[in-house]
Image 1 (cartoon, rainbow, N blue to C red):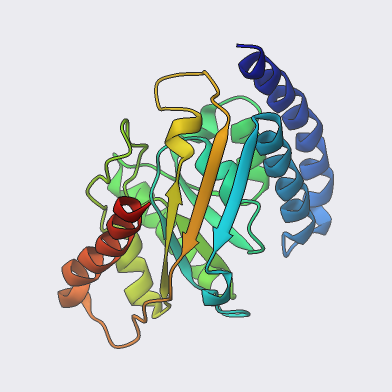
Image 2: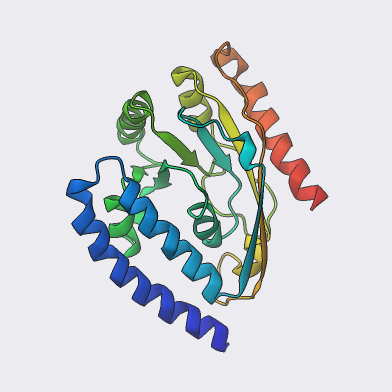
Length: 233
């Protein structure tokens, strides 16, 4: 109980401190490096406060200086804390509901995260066009293809949007498996349980010669990689 109270106090205060830093840096930080630095510290602080140990494998699979789409399974808010500690520069694609959360939503907007309205095709298309423009400028993207958090850690069906984006932009997809985040804080609860988080970064999957007819096979391939990692750990 004390750990949970401590975490919520720290995340509230740290977000209140980080938000003005984001706002101040934003006009002068076109490449997002300063904001990434602050976000990295924020993520590590929240993990440390929660009594979480983080283990990362597969960093060598990341292609440097080339845009990629990172696709990760989604179990908990701790997925975000863990992923922003990685030495990567990327833009998040997130459902619009997250942008309505006080402090967090404002910070996400300032950090350049892209809001996607899952129930409005026209707005979703506009958001994807913005993301594609970012990719053309060399920015990587990170997305949770399940679209929402799993209640029990079971991998949910993947949405097609991110795969379509990758194939149209002709950039590789990098599967990322998050293990243990759902045990730290399960969906539907606010209680923190100290523990371990493991991140597995798999080898990039090339989409250069793939068309929309290959999309279902591509989805299956990424799902299979993440599902196998989850079952083996």
